[in-house]
Image (cartoon, helix red, strand yellow):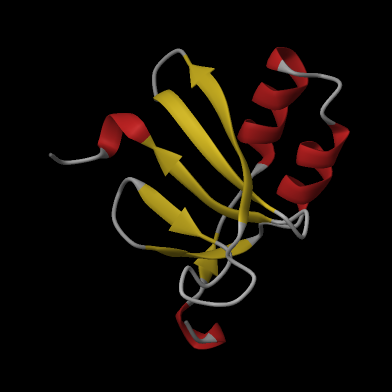
Length: 93
């Protein structure tokens, strides 16, 4: 993952969803605010950390439910960052 391949990402709508569904999770809101550029692996996954790197140690999978986008899984890393976001409805099986 190099910086040249990162694309813009707007986390504001996911932040709004967290504020409604889990308003006490300020840690996730703060981490999402830093997710401005990421790497799309497919329509289903956007990453903000290298999955093969040393920081990829998942502390929690935080699940949200969006009325049209379905289940959204935030990979919260042990260092407090959001490692990636999965849009379950978009996963091709």
